[in-house]
Image (cartoon, rainbow, N blue to C red; front, top):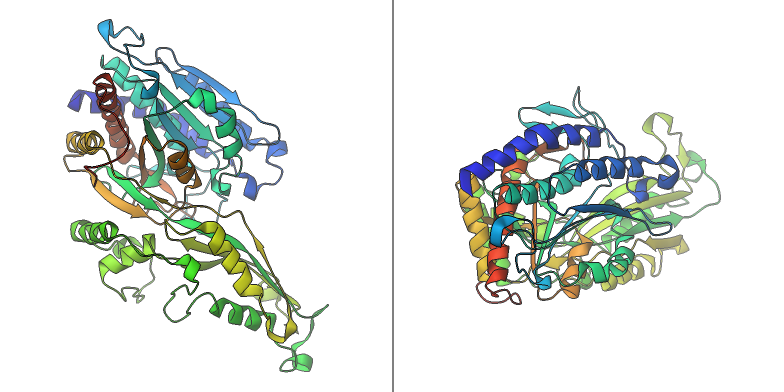
Length: 493
């Protein structure tokens, strides 16, 4: 559909999507993990209402939009569009079989505000600067519903055809998607057996082409607590006699991580990296560099201690431990000379895509709590483990369609990149729909800073990605019409 389609999609973004995204970003729709009273505060419901109202106003043949609610869980938005095209382009089924369903996934919940936003920017203050829409949740992942429906609308407006589309937008992804399995089960008959699944919650290595995610890391996380006294005591009186809980915590962490190299020591958290992913990492670095220049490093900081391809593998296929929160530490301006009775650290252990998250979480707890120094009271309270995902080989028609779409709308071939983040749903979908082509794409590129301050959506990337999705829908319909779809197999990237 070429240049005309891209122009049509850009018009939809300018006139309809960007104004709605401005309103969406202004809603502090925190994920349940960050707002225990999310139901009472109503911000997630506000986001749902905005998205649903926008969706229902789209001129898409046969579109039905509803909000599905299960007791005690964040609501899910379901948008369904029947197959379109065929004889007469009249919106009828066009002969597409039921197994031709395309399932789209995104989410509307958000990460907490964080600090460090630049002057004039803020998590709930949408601002457009230099083609970037700043604010929390626009790129991660509020744009997903807008882009998906805009792609479907563009196909219909161009007189093209598409198979049945089902769009599922959830509200607990930033909490690890704890509410999603119940909805997947409740909606199983309605979802059916999709032949193509497209997740729009990922990233891109640059903004110059369509990027397909080849892998996602899993995660083991939880809170390590070290207690040693029933109350704080003057550090001058007991320091040296009673060990610091922080020092004990440091010793325990050394069981998990080599503090010199950052290597994670748990066997359960390490895997053999597939040769294909090693070669893809090298090809990525050859094409765009190691990506380090895009990091907000301070003057004089140098983290290039390995070749670029190894840095990419560290980011996507090797485990990494981070302390992302702490309790028991007073602010520095209120810190008295007191030996604190307790230190608690929130740990996040990113896992290789093929590591077993249950085994890694169990090993984390076992290793941290065994034989505690000085008999200190040590506990580890795990979060729900999150599986990683290693993409199955692409069907030849999918690989060809992706490359053609990228060439048409970016002028460059499609790229393939591993991501260091986690989308628990993908492993579930791969297990549930083993014959479906699974695609993970997104707009989170260099500097976009999901979860952190100054998060932005690169608007032109959003436009071009939407046009690529429209082309992919057309290619899928053509493939289904010719009965060529099958299990993922040979011909992969």
